[in-house]
View: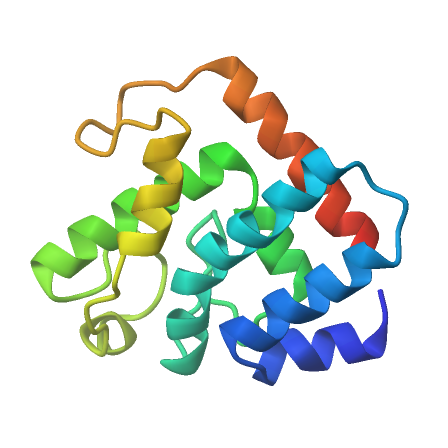
Amino acid sequence: MKESTYTLFANASLEEIVQEIEEELKTRNESPFWSEKVGPFSSAILSVLIPLRDRNILFDPQGKKIDILTPELFLEWSDFVSLKMLVFILAKSNEAGQLLRTKLNVEECKRYESIDLEKLGSYLSNYSVNLENEALDFPIANYNLHQGVSNVIKSLL
């Protein structure tokens, strides 16, 4: 991955990162089908990762503290199962007023401030993710679709 991509993820706004991804996509010979998916998917993920980054409480899907938002961490969270888990972690954390289900220390967890889940929640519900019951699964076709979107994004970074 390009050094500029690391700088972008570490410092830029959601809009700047998504714009860069979409601009790079325009230079590729990807199907319009993928072009329509990449921006909204990236935006949905970044809508929660950027606030975590800015509050210095980023974590990976295993709950381990991560200091810098990198393209690799973004791609880890782009896995549809991980993304579903993330929305439930943050929803429960919003209710509790502190970050839950991570390995961050107690003081870091207490620094948590509620994160707006509207963009991510809307995106996931459009793909049949039940946002009321974490145990319910989503259609495998939606998982496969998002693996494809993640692969396209990975090729752009």
